Image (tube, rainbow, N blue to C red; front, side):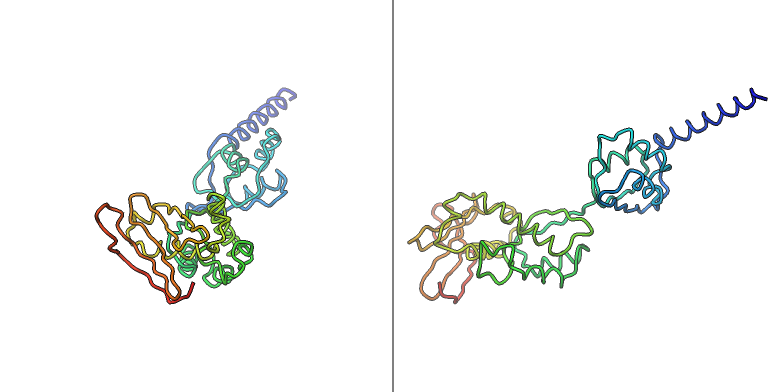
Length: 280
């Protein structure tokens, strides 16, 4: 009788070991094929996270995953929003959480878009509503030190490829875009940034106009080199290597933006022109 009890105990121990090993090493999926989001709260313990993963169908056993967390206590699990769309082992899931591979969605903001067009883009991509984005873009607090007189963030929403989480607010999105503008602005030579000949918002407006006037996609991808006029100069030039040059001429009542070919002998014939009756 005693031997039978020992045998049963050993068989049970072996079964538990097999189940525990399978829970750690065999890929598992008990969520819909479309995938599932798992939001890990900040400060959550390994036990709470393990139970959450079991509820979402991402791991087989909360006990096994919690044991894995204790075994690899040096690697902390990062809070955030995660997305799982294929089977994985407990080790795979642990690696995703410990490396903080949170879910983000990419969006490309092309050059030349107004803040209204960007608002439409963000709503179309499902990040925020058009109204919320425009409300955030009309708050000039993020650029008050650069352009105190600006009425909105128009021109300061830097065109680039961004990655946002599905919980990003309109204000957070706008701040990231303005932050990218600041990075680019600060990369300019200090004499250009500290030049008092033209205010920042005037330079930004000029660059925006150039981007909108440049209809050829290849030219939009070329970074504009802004050469800001020094005090006493009457021209601001944006040079595009190997492409048409854009100059801005000033007089009392009218300023003109023109595109002209840099090819020797081509003269000054303009390809396109923008006029404004605003005095400078």
